[in-house]
Image (cartoon, rainbow, N blue to C red; front, side):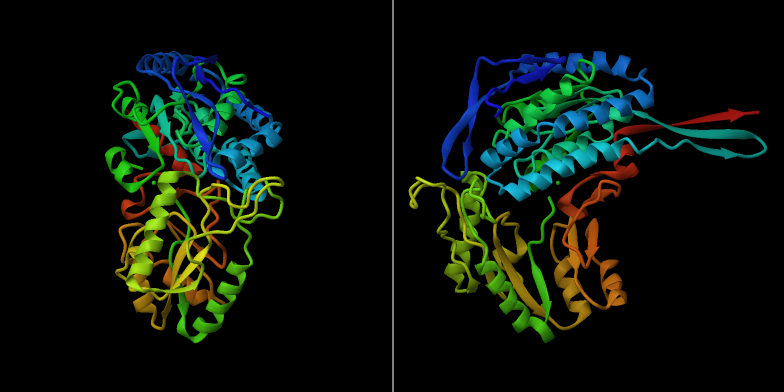
Length: 449
């Protein structure tokens, strides 16, 4: 298992005078030491990225594809160790960690299938050619919920097409012809730091870098004059300071004709879920990742209880499964999956994002009403619609103010398709050719005859 972690700057590991440690959310015990990068580390990483930008641009596209594929295979060869890191630092059960690792691998491989378009327009006077060129050095800041997938979302394609160098800080992202600098989340730094370390042995120095740190590091990247773009995934307040944002269903609307039996099935399924330490084999749901988020989730339970809302199942506390030999009363940020039946549409639970296992359900009868309620929010990342009537489902889908709609499927982003949000759920996006072009500058050349 991986137990040592460093910043990666200019292709080499660099330790730090100051370190911190993440917390195992299942036990509240400290994990391994992680580096805290300094302002000097940021400057060194940006300088290395700028040097790499010049040479990486000259590497043939086929060669860049080959390196990305080699990186993907090298990353997947550490599947066991990476799964252990994810389970320990995020609290994810084994199957969830497995999916994240393989989705990350698939994203890297998908990036090698893209080519930048060249558009031409001709008339009797001239030929106009539109090409896309790399932005330059890109910084990436990623959150704690999906440290590998969201790092890969930024990484996929950038190393191929952009000549920039990226500096990370346990917030991951980068991959094109550019070079990238990634910032790892202080809550979940380990898998990101190690993923970049694996890549640094394959890419030229400075193309892929990562920094670990605290909340002082992000502003250094955001305000740096030689970083052309910041890719950020995180909270809306922080995103407003940087500008780009997560996807999971947080409200459920059930047609009134099936409301009661459907809710009963939901309750039955939810009560069968097993909560506990993700290292226990039959656990379905692990803990909330950190104490701050746990307190936020508990505030939704407190509000629902104070307002007298009906708990269809769950109550906020959790009896959880432990490893053999552990106390059943041990610590951990565990929450029982909870369904709140038909709270008011202006309630805290309906209008805000808990980012935890508590969800409201409401009945609906008229299409116009459910569409209006669905759109009555400042968020708009994704939605899913389940129906045997595909015509109706598609009619509703195009009226929803969200970036992605999934019909008869849970929210399941595809690496080949652009993924973005509406409203306060994001500026710009990732994945697909359009996501790649977000890291490019357009240049039009007009050649007159």
